[in-house]
Length: 345
Image 1 (cartoon, one colour):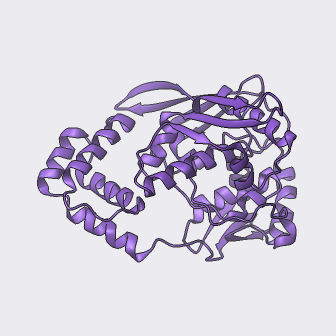
Image 2: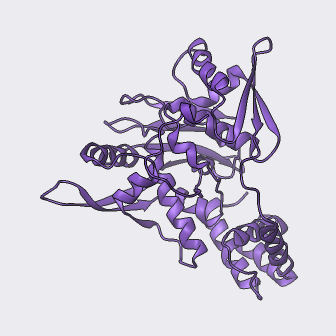
């Protein structure tokens, strides 16, 4: 497998990262069907529109084009830092301080002048692209314009021209993914996948299969979900080395040419949720009292209080903290944040 991946430039441990595509269409877990990172290495300045059921999302790129799937590395890194902070007991902040050199090492990139220039270009594309989506609430259509980040601040050494520090101000939709623990673990070899289509296929496999045994797509469906601008015939050509090379992290890729089906099979290399985390979630849920459920109904009207209690328990178990003796006040705060992020169901 390793001969198909880029060489390891900087040895590192496992990564705990988030897939922000889950957040674009709020709680819709099928939002991976709406790819908004360009698979092109050239500037992609064409506006796009993707649809799913009654929801749609449009992408308005900046003059430098849509963010690429390589630009996404910066968001992966930023959210990884937030999650690490949660586990250490630090509050979640929209502002994330990034060491540019550490980022380049983390994502298996070079650390020369061109790599710092490429980082600046990534920020331009991420900051410049806006998203517009409609979501129906009780028959009312709401149009919302948003971005991945709300700004960035950079300090550069005048003598060398290298970036000394970088601060990203993450948008609400990204921060909410951390607050609600809508996160996915990516294999450390994700950054070693050399082609954009390889990263995108891995993402779709990771989202669809998770820790199940496998998942099957029609090739036409996979093509649509990928966001590829090429023809179906070209997409099949791009898939061929992925199938034959058998190098995709975590999942094997099988192709049934007669039925035109692609199946992802779990290699069982993905760490599973620990029994300790499951035990913690169960304990937290048990400590939400009937009064706590009543408070949740007031804080998040229209939402099922028991559903919110389950989400709260899972979220808390991911923080790595022991189950609180008094869960009700924390649960109430969670419900207030949930209502602010999601509105009425």
